[in-house]
Amino acid sequence: MKRITLIAAALLFCSALSYGWGFFGHKVIHQLAIYNLPKQLQGFYFKHHNYLISKSVRPDERRNDDPAEAPRHYIDIDVYGDEAINTMPEAWEAAAARYTADTLLKYGIVPWHVVVVQERLTNAFKEQNADSILYYSADLGHYIADAHVPLHTTVNYDGQLTAQKGMHSLWESKLPELFAQTYKLQGKKATYLPDTEKQIWQVVRHTYSLIPQTLSYELEVSKEFTPEAKFDQVERNGKMRQYYSDAFAEAYQQKLGSMVEDQMRAAAQQVASFWYTAWVDGGKPDMDKLMFQALTKADKKQLKQEKKAFRRGQLFEKCLVVAAKGQTKE
Image (cartoon, rainbow, N blue to C red):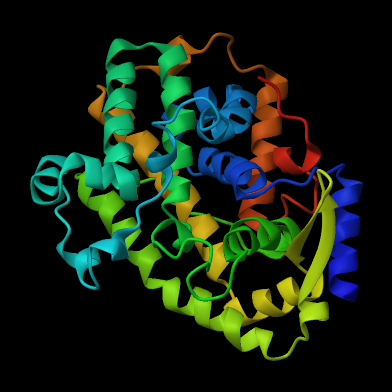
């Protein structure tokens, strides 16, 4: 508990807000992705980093009003059979011909939707439309990040089929909230992706491979806890709800090892590479000319400072994580 107390103190020191993966995690991933970009893109994305970070959660917010939005965030690949992760057609047309479009939509379409948004971003670069570049970059990053969450790839998305209800928020929300500042989130430069469709399916296959550990480790850790110690009872909106305790989250984090931080780091790497690929395929427009305002000396100094902290793994220590400050602006 001492470790959690220290972490909580660090969050308070940076004026942190409590977000789930859909908020805190997505915002951190988008910020990290900017540091992974090459110079030709980095200035533009950094100049508009507040927009990109704040709008990284927009797809989740749309779910309240758009019934077509929810399936874009996941794929229950195992509903199609034990080997479906390896046999599912990667192309939408072929998959729809085998299973019907309605069935695909029912069980999630995240890899196919990534391809759709990637094409829109590429077209935005071709048209040199800065507003559209920013809009689709924010959306695309969200879906790619979701594809890195194991419980976004299975019909047992919340552990509800194995008496482990609540697993979803534990893995993607509580663990990053408590432990992100201990993660090693340094990344590598974005690379060009010759086939983004194959790439996103490679991501999904790896993410799905983490399902057994994600679930079995929770069961193993549970043996060390009584129900009273494992869960906290919290009143919300007049109802008592059950959530995993901080003590259980710490034990589960230790059991998982680097899984969550590996997935966050990989997500940031992939987001940057997809952005970069769209820019290349879009004709490599001069991004300096598309900035609404040129980088100031202060901007350049700030970017240099943040990149240095990023390389040294000191973003949280130096309170440079925008999501932890709760200061993103549109």
